[in-house]
Image (cartoon, rainbow, N blue to C red; front, side, top):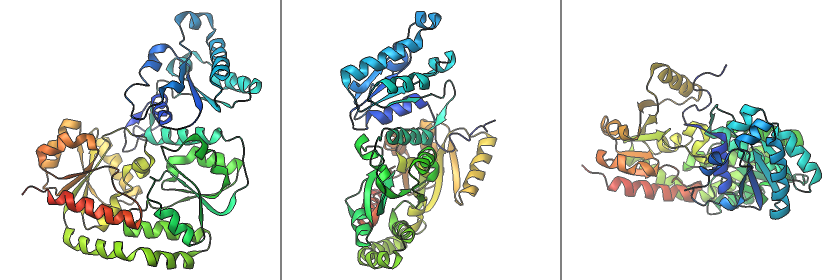
Length: 414
């Protein structure tokens, strides 16, 4: 039996169908999505999503009469056929729903039968029914679905990496890896098009910042292609960036080459960080997690805590500000989880958005790192804020991060 908080950890719970649709709305590519459900279930999904591409979504529009007559799978088969003929997509994803789970529709068999008669891959996704899931499981399933559309599996190219889940940068990561003789096959995140995901098999090493974020994808690639996965620190700050590059280089036995390249690129960032860390030592930072349901890998990784060490490197005294239930068993769960993650930090829990203001007032915080949507709640506490996800990667990104934080601290109200 699943423990009460195991699925979501420190993040919010999620609906698999809704989460995957949000992910696929911002994924480029000529594919189609069929939602096997009644119309109201589908109608709530395509509205108000930034960067949405709703034209690729279709619904079987199940009626009560279909359910009573046992013809729901016939309706799905017909819908797949029509979408394939009219839209001619490179792949069709068929999503189950609470309804299809409850009535026991075998959408996987329907999809397999349709794929056998079409030249288009048809990939079925069973939902979690009336149960919920986690943000990280949605991210993993999205990545797995993108990979499943790859019909060609070329041999991995030596000395190449797939960067999975990292935000795009200004090109520095690729430049430094190339300087050590390591190529980037593909750099993937939540905005990458389907065509990029289909290039995954050609990389010799899959690099992620959290293996737990891609467990299904890892299993599938290891079984079909055999290429390994490596977990690395997120390359924010100097220490994290150093470790990121050296760990990848170690896999390819190119540590000496990488060290020479790093030494040429890190000095300005290291000197600037050292100076600022001396100035900011002991300042109190509130690190907010659990407030927003998002499907951005580099924000969700490591239960939302992958950038804690970046702030500590800058001298900040970090307190975790966690939104959610304050009941005793959750407090105990969080304490144990932080111990497992080897994160030593105080934490405070606030119940809802409006409770963030008094939570910030409890301590004399100098800076808060939280989702941009919470600015209205932060402002009354008179604490400067930088938005969650705004830190850039690499040594050049470190310099920009220092400027971002310095500008925020300059706005402190005495």
